[in-house]
Image 1 (cartoon, rainbow, N blue to C red):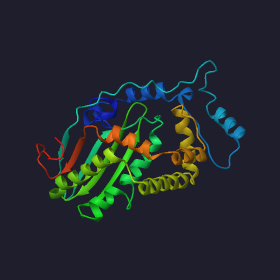
Image 2 (tube, helix red, strand yellow):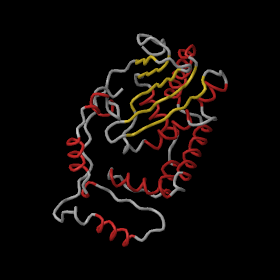
Image 3 (cartoon, helix red, strand yellow):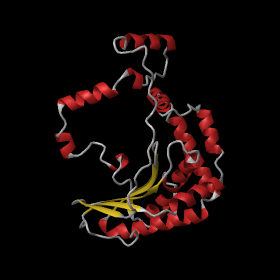
Length: 275
């Protein structure tokens, strides 16, 4: 989907790029990037703010330049997306792994709350539409769910399914039918209510751990996002309307799809559901 852009490249690199790394290049990268002015120090829990500041200043005393200015996040550049289509990776697996995706929303898009409710209702648990249609009613997949990921310059909405290799076309057909129906008609009031409840619950439970709170603060600082209180996030989730969901579903789910399949297939295999 992301083509030859940073988002489309392997996170770990390739055999060639890793093999070619030298000690000097790693050290140079560290010295250029791992600077106090480019860092965020985040703390959560039973801590004293002034004490944390003193400890940080003491730890970085030999590295902090009084004249240096903090760097903001690098400006986002338009992603060079690849052409929609299908990619098959041949592996001798008993189960086929299928991911169907469309471009999503950037992390700062205000519609992300509507998309979160949409994704949760569509494929976020055992009561979700995809789980019911694909697994419960038809027994086609061992696992099926939808997910979203927002980056500073692009995003993705995807559907994953793990199934028998012989069932891939049928699973894709059912998933695409459900995506088309939601793109055309949105979700029912009951689906929206359940989706909101799940998002609210996951948001609250996710902040019970101090490590999660620390990470949330750091991410907001790193991306220069406003640090919203949990109650503010819950209010924005509650404010999502059926029209909000219909609009984001229409914009995203009707887009040309990208398909990736891993399984015991020839890499020239085509699937009827996606051209």
